[in-house]
Image: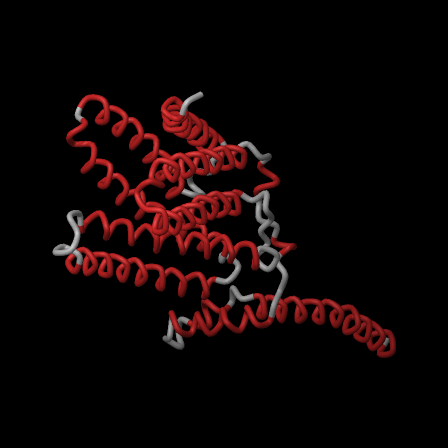
Length: 295
């Protein structure tokens, strides 16, 4: 199989598998759990259909449509990162809300940085918008690698196993992101002669990630559930969580209502309930004895 045929096979294989991902996500009610990933997958299928048609019937417009679709995919990928992060941080509501706020600021900073890069490179480069999009894509790829590292390090603390669908999403994006970053580095050294090999390798890795996501959609439902009993309590995490809640909701009237979700207060409540249950029989016993003495 020559490289031309292999390129077409890899180009069309991914959306075919992604249709299966959409089907099983809808059937197993994962769409409501991960709406942005579902939308991202549907967008990739539409992108391939549109780009394939434009490439064969309107090749002059392919360049502009390709980079427009790439920009939308980058922002959708960023939204998926945020979605997986929020899912992973559900046991720690304060850290989740603080992380969401930081994600919004990071998205704004990335857009401003890309715009400034496009303006600064408008004189030196023939396609400044393309340079800005590539810079934005690299930044998002770095965040995807960071998300994979975060899931890898903190999965035991958050009650996540590697069979969980969120872990699979992070693993697939991390694989694609790491490959893209390596290919960008190689292209900087070897120049444009590396473009064909880079495109082929990126397509191959992306197809492997799509197959990985498809495998996670067909994993039994019980294996994908978060197990609350497996969430390992860490006092340091709880302190960070309470500090984050005080930062996000600084009003004294709001902090007590939200702080009830922390693990530290749940442990305290459990101890108080156990002590109350133990104290109840003893108090009843004394009252019965007193009644017998009085009689």
